[in-house]
Length: 111
Image 1 (tube, one colour):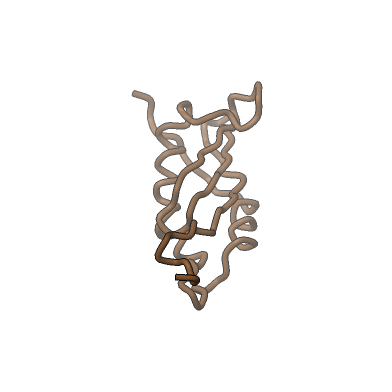
Image 2 (cartoon, rainbow, N blue to C red):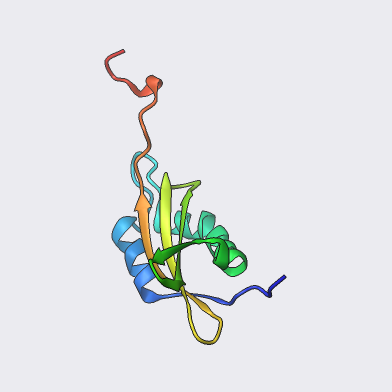
């Protein structure tokens, strides 16, 4: 078994987070940036650290870029792109969030 990779989150990752989530929770329970960092970041770090080679390539022909697409606990889903750099560290570069939840039959206002 390979040793876990060191993980570094870039300023671009945090910029993406800042653009997609507010600093505080929304009035309808929308998650905050802190919620995402507390609940989603640990698993992102763990997966990139220990399973980088199992993730799908983010760029065809570039095995040093991988993407994690997953459902979240505070967001519907997210995709994260990381790059393995020359010293074995993985830099987490990009974050895209899917914030909406599908309507359930109980959510139909016409009932």
